Structure formats: structure tokens, C-alpha cells
Image 1: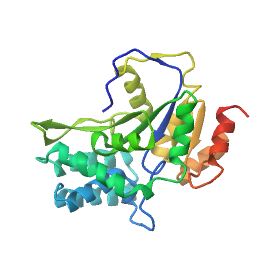
Image 2: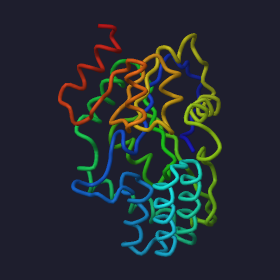
Image 3: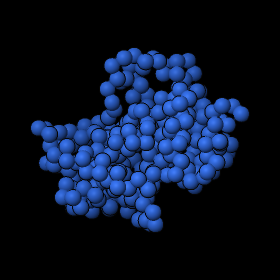
Image 4: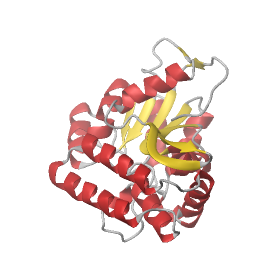
Amino acid sequence: MRRNITERPVMEKFAGFDIDGTLAGCPPADTSGYREYYIFKLAEYLNRNGRFNRGYFNAMLKDFEQYSKDRNYGTFAVNCINHFASGIRGKKQDDVIRIGKNYLQKNREEIYTHSAEIVRYCNENGFLTIGISASPLNEIIDPFCNDIGIKEAIGTTFKTERGRYTGETDRTYAGKFSKLEALFGFFTDGNYELAENFLGNSSFFGNSFRGDYTVLCAVGHPFPTNPDSKLKRMAKIHEWPILDLHDGNILSTVKSKLEGK
């Protein structure tokens, strides 16, 4: 679910980034809705390349259709992950990872205009940048984070035997923990020493009320980014800055908040 960390570093502050809908989204002119999520885009691309069972992709589409009706994100995420795990059963992990990287290379236009700029600023100013998503870690989230400059990644991993997927998940926070709990699990597993007021010094960028609100409330520098309607309403109540990653002035907004200007 995360990269191995061998030393005991001090966690002074982090900048957390939700991925789907925050740093990257649907392909241009796409109105399907489900292609906002990398787990769907990867499954669809794998299917085109003979590495994903079409029946399980159809099951994922039904999961999204149900989520569009009941807005139960926890159930939606768990069902999608389980269907994705079934869809890659028996496939070679190396092939799936290679195809995932190929997808990212061919579809860089899905990354929002100023995503890399914000990540670079956070890296240069002492934040440990962390990408977090329930989507597949090794197959799409870790390569995405490497590409955009995010230092660490949290996502879902899948069991393998002799280099092939078994059809089971290994580690995932979806349906079990909030993103905030997943982040603390990352700090614990990484053997971090947490500095005093590290949460107050940290920031988080997220677009979803259901998935990101608890983390935004916990950090000292919350940045609702491309927020959904409910998160936008809550951001206005809290007087949080609302970011649009297509806005050319976004970096100045982030700088002014993080630098106390």
C-alpha cells in the first residue's frame, strides 16, 4: 500500500494530494463521469490490451451507476476494487504495470494544468508530498506520482503468486478507514517521528466532501481543489481558499496561504 522507508525520519509537515478529480480528471470532452477515476481508465485500457476481463469491467460500470444513485462511496469503492482484482486475475503483474505506465504517457492531457506546479512548490518548501487514492498503487498511482513529482504514494495493492495476480486485494483503506486514518497508518508503517503540531503545519488538496473533508478539517492549510458542490459549500463556511487547477493564479493563492501573506 506504500513504499518502504528504512530510516526513522521526522515528520515536520506534509502536503497530501487526492488524485482522482483533484490533480487529474476525465479525458477532454468526456462526459461519462466514471473516467474521472484512474481505476476505471486503467481497467478499460487493460481490456483493450487483452489484460482485463470485460465482464468485470461491466460490473464496475454497474458499481458506478449505483453510486450515481445512492452516493454511498464506501460501498462503491470496495466493489470497484474487488471487481478490478477479479478482472486482472491470472494476468502477469509486469504486463499490467507496463500497460498502466503506457496509459499515463499517452494521456498526459488528463492531468490538470497546474498540478505539477503546485507539487513542485510543496517539494521545494519542505513538505513531504504524498498522493493518496483507493485506485491501484503499483499499476497506476505510484507511476502517476513519480511522473508528477509526488514523493510518496498510498493506494490499493493486490496479491500475486509467481508474478500473476490471484484475484484478491492485499492492502486497501477503502471501506475500512478514512484518508486521515490511512495517512496515519502510512506514518506508523514508515516509522515516522511526528513533530509537534505537524498537522497544523501540513496541507491537503482534495475535491470530494465524502472522501476529503475529514483530512481538510485536520490540517492547518486545507485546499479544497476543484471541489464538488457540498465541499464547496463547506469551504465557504470555513472560509477556506477554493482552488481551480485550470486557474493561472492558483500558485499565488497557495503561496499566500502557506507563507502567511
